[in-house]
Length: 441
Image 1 (cartoon, one colour):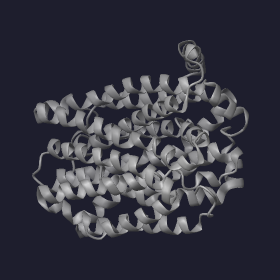
Image 2 (cartoon, one colour; image 1 turned 90 degrees about the horizontal axis):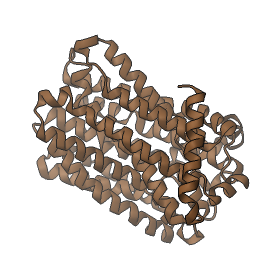
Image 3 (cartoon, helix red, strand yellow; image 1 turned 60 degrees about the horizontal axis):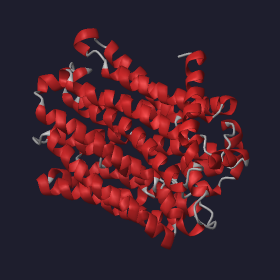
Image 4 (tube, one colour; image 1 turned 45 degrees about the vertical axis):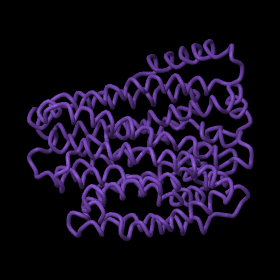
């Protein structure tokens, strides 16, 4: 990928978005919210397409020479590489942002994400190229991680900065809707192919189609984001240093304490995130006789409850405060960790209870997880500081969650998986206790 290809493409797209949106005047917060939701849904669709494939595809395609459990653990180890690479992506793309602008950065990052995702769709299996299959998968996954670090666009901060003080919780939850929406689409797509193709056809070619769909969605998301980037509101915010990208080094020097606290404050919701998405799918797939397509349908239904809970979190947070809501939900997640994982061995009813209750708790906590500490950053560092806290929270709270939970539960039973979730809840409560009780937090 070279500058002569990516930079002109970004400039062309920006001109196109100005032309297409100019007659509408300034984009209002509602239109910004739509752009945010489209962008985040695209990100999480990519995320969940890979996550589902890491359970139902890669252990057989890339690691067929080991037992299914070991193959899944290997697959989860590669899954975690994106979270390790993500902070490095933020470092690289922040420099691009500062030098060439947000439009260029987003174009390059989304091009990298789309290319890495499509490359996975063409991945040869172990039977064709041996261990090189795993090496290629790891390389493409790192590419996705670097891109995830670069697609931070600051739109969530733009919404927060333009929101009425009494509605901060409502605006904070809007970007979070992308997670369950992305899961719903990805799970439904995989469920369709799993239910309608033979095992041989699915493993041969059926699983590849969701990755092609992900690339197409990225193109739509890029246009939607660039349309917001060039609006007058966004430009004014940039000029006023409200959303200017500071260097990572300067941000850490000035706001290191808040970055660390911000990384640990949402760990309860981020740990629960994978405990109700990737991990239960792997457990059901490996240790029960239930068809994965059926469980994916359960996930889709449960994610609908998650969407509702995220919306409700906005109303609740505006009445009791985001910090208070996060503390209460962290305590609830801690209680949930003590008994809920065992429900995965409770048959259809147990699985349904685990998933629905888990997604409700996830929605209430995840809906406000991004805003509890961001307001503590000094304005010149808010854009980069928010990106760094997000990267580190995903790394510590979610990146290794499927690997750790599956490894523990396969050796010590499902109750041990709750220990990981409990540790996240404790970290959240400790971090929230350290957060300054500033107005609006």
